[in-house]
Length: 93
Image: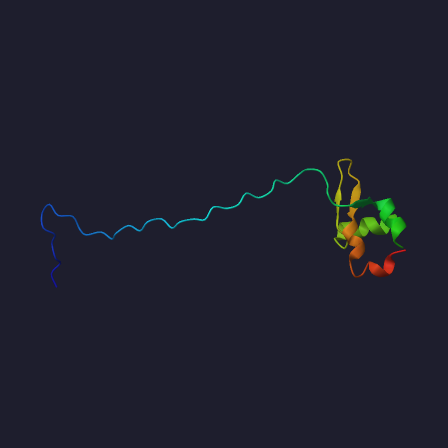
């Protein structure tokens, strides 16, 4: 089979370009504040509310059983929501 040659001065036909799809405007997300809005307890306070020792609270936070974060001084703050965990309900005083 012989290949078809294009006529001189004519360009090969191209596909029509599609218009870009319309994008919906996103609603702006609320900015995150740096102040803590959730309730936290120090390790000592959390251990007083439960039958855990301070060492036990520290270990459980490090293991991820309890939710917590370190403050600017390096002390653990335990999330108050950790008191609502199913395995913690039997350990509340």
